[in-house]
Amino acid sequence: MDLGFGGKVAIVTGGGAGIGEATVRLFAQEGAQVVIAEANPERGKALEEDLKKQGFVAEFVEVDVSQKDSVDQMVEKVLHRFGQIDILVNNAGVYAKGDALVFTEEDFARLVDVNVKGVILCTQSVGRRMVERRSGVIVNVASEAGLVAIPNQMVYNLTKAAVISITRSCAVDFASYGVRVNCVCPGTTYTPLVEEALRKERDPEKVRKSLEDSRPLKRLGKPEEIAAAILFLASPLLGYATGAVLSVDGGYTVW
Image 1: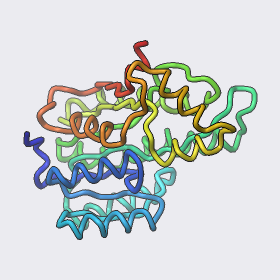
Image 2: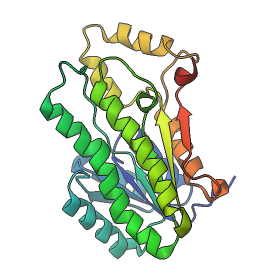
Image 3: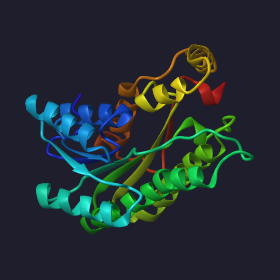
């Protein structure tokens, strides 16, 4: 099935690893020209080189999504290189544990800066160009943690609920300009972020088993599965969908 990405330009923030990397690779395979918007130059350049060796069109652009100047510079570089932006995937995110009594101010600022402010800044900068062209799609990556209360990660839950709210608000605001805004809520997916979080546990295998057992499918998600959902919502085949919130969580939020 042709998803309609031939010749399209797609930006994926946090595109150098995990769900972001899987999304970049899938967009490239579907014929899109892909921008790896990544804070880690080593990861971003390595992925760019790998994709180019395979004959795909890919460009790494370093960005700190929490800083307006950095985001605006990234967007200008993409426009200079490709002339347009058709798709934005707001995937960059950070994680920290802690309930309401132990969460630190520093962790709060870091999570809100990247997970919430970063989505807003990228949406503003790219969305402005999409509105001018009266065309474009934005897909935000939230989490099952934005839909239900997961213990001991109060601020992370808060930031992902905010991403869902941003999605719905922007879907309404941008609809008359032909710009769609949708959201994917992944369940726990085995990415470098989750791997790092598990390593910090006293018994990583026990914690992983409990995460798997907490959902009907009894396993963690794969980055490629979340990437497929992102491409589905970005595709013109789903052109009637805006403000959609798609759970891809192994059944966690319906159990």
